Amino acid sequence: MLEKLFKLKANNTNVKTEIIAGITTFLAMAYILFVNPSILGQTGMDKGAVFVATCLAAAIGSVLMGMIANLPIALAPGMGLNAFFTYTVVLHMGYHWQVALGAVFISAVLFFCLSIFKIREWIIRSIPLPLRSAIAAGIGLFLAIVALEGAGIVVDNPATLVGMGDLTKPGPLLAIAGFFLIVILEARRVTGAVLIGILVITAISILTGLSPFGGVISSPPSLAPTFLQLDIAGAFNVGLISVIFAFLFVDVFDNSGTLIGVTRKAGLTDEQGNIPSMGRALLSDSIAALFGSLLGTSTTTSFVESSAGAAVGGRTGLTAIVVGILFLLSLFFSPLAGSVPVYATAPALLFVAVLMASSLAEIDWKDISTAAPATITALSMPLTYSIANGIAFGFISWTVIKLCTGRYKELNPALIVLTVLFVIKLGWLTA
Image 1: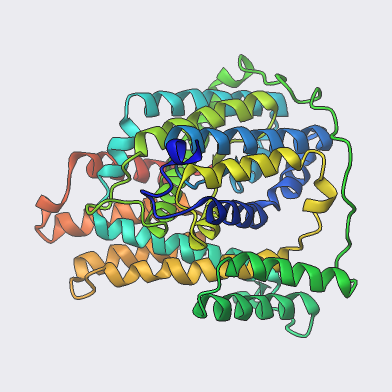
Image 2 (image 1 turned 120 degrees about the horizontal axis):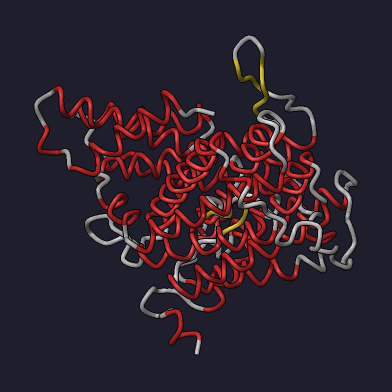
């Protein structure tokens, strides 16, 4: 049955590999179960309900992606989008969280329409191959900064923006050890190297008393405080038009960037760099975004941490199904999921960053009109802490440079239209 549903042999994988990949992806993104309630809770939302909504939104989204698109990509409420929801829409602009949820719902409906009419698919297919390579590498660099920051190896510095953390502390040292362990195991072709690295560091952390073992079972909190509490009518306020557009814009391009990066890492793209099941993938994540807003959480999106599962061999939707099941189990085993410290998953993300950065080798560095936009794309993602910003800068620089150097034949209508929209977004709609 699994072979018929997921075409395991055709994708050169098996059930064991897919399960390991699913567990690896889950462990790499399980932090969202605790970070999301913490962030959204600042709006006045019930943290227990947000925790349940996060579990259910991630489970539904991941299962949809696995069943409809047969891709090893997991979904959950997106980082960045939850911060925009809380700190900008609610705390800065002063809207109630119910209205903010209404804005998420409206943006998800628009997102769904873009997917149904294949506008998103048309957008992604219009991205030149060098830019796709740069996007994949940029996501890797973005993962690297997230990993290094989470491990405490890189910290903020008022004078230089970033600086080195205290490497004498246990967290950074364990993260470094975990990274070396993963690389060594992978070099020796040990199956499940990333998962082994995460579990070993977690075990050491618990046994030495650095992180608590939270127990095994707990009853899930009630979802009632956030379920169907969105205020759609209030979200049609004129002042929220830019907010809805921002939710839509960031979700479209964060999702697109993640789809490109993860599928390239998993070797699922064709010779032209296209994703064969892209239309179904886009439909899956747009439906997941709708469900998330109804459950009571910020926009649900494809998670870049899915690259961790792809790195250990995840190739089909079975990987995503495993992630979905684990998120459902997390409703009852949240203390156990919370026992994995950040510095145990950070080495996995850093390892994936190394693998994804290899996409830069596919770029023609002798052609400055190609090399410049590719570099800008890749560097903008970690330095602006946004995949969407990196894509925006990449589109703008590619179009301007190609046009001004007389190589307009390398442009297409979608590139030009999107460049104009990106300029408008960055210049006038940066809320």
